[in-house]
Length: 65
Length: 242
Image 1 (tube, rainbow over the protein chains, first blue to last red):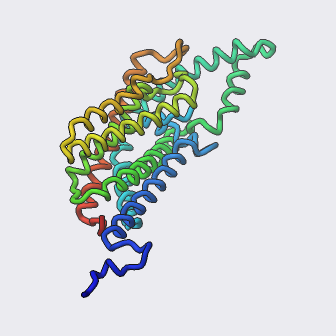
Image 2: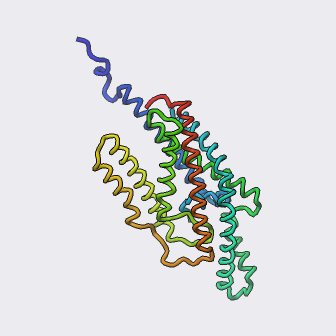
Image 3: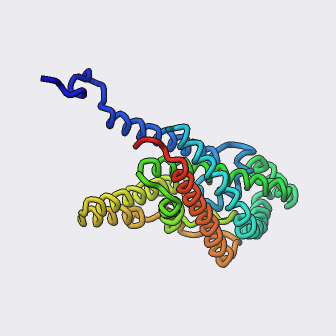
């Protein structure tokens, strides 16, 4: 009897389909986090940077004041 | 895959920023400057009322201006326009990464689908929050900052959650999910946004409503440009696996 390949995979290792899905999800999550950091910077960067983004913050309705 | 999502999103953000900047400068900028005139009048009046010992409105005005100088936009028009172009492009890039993260999870993406998701992004991040906290020009006081931030986050979370719920309801043909999703979308508006009982401002109501429409229009241009461009880019350079 020949075992299917995925059946002999060590415990803790994902099958290729799950691994690809996990990779896609984590890549998307990291991209989204980076986006959130940039948006936070535009909205809440202190000092001069806050003055420079003044008109953008008003237009985009950022709740920062 | 991460690198490709980031690269395409930043490129889409750059292009959307380039499209939105002229709209922003033509449509919104003049209204902001008008409102700032009223804001300064109110500041000067308030400062005069408070500084009894100085009896000098100009000194008081200068003092108020100095205190806020670092957080105010530049007096130089060109400088200010460039700063707005850069910051609105950065905001577009930030939203592009959120949009890219979502789009990369769906199969076949083209510019039309991108446009649809861009419109949904506009609904989630601009339109739904604007129902309770409309974009306001300078010189208009608002309710407690933390409460407004909390309500904004609640609204964005509920609206985006509701859209996922509606998608699920449609995909799995479950009507009850759609009802639940709509209830979730309505929740923040039933709770109600934090607002001031009385607003003391010199900014006319007409200017406030004009600004709100102009700001939403500018943001709509940003989101639609972002969605269309990012959808097209993802169609041309698909992220390899799902």
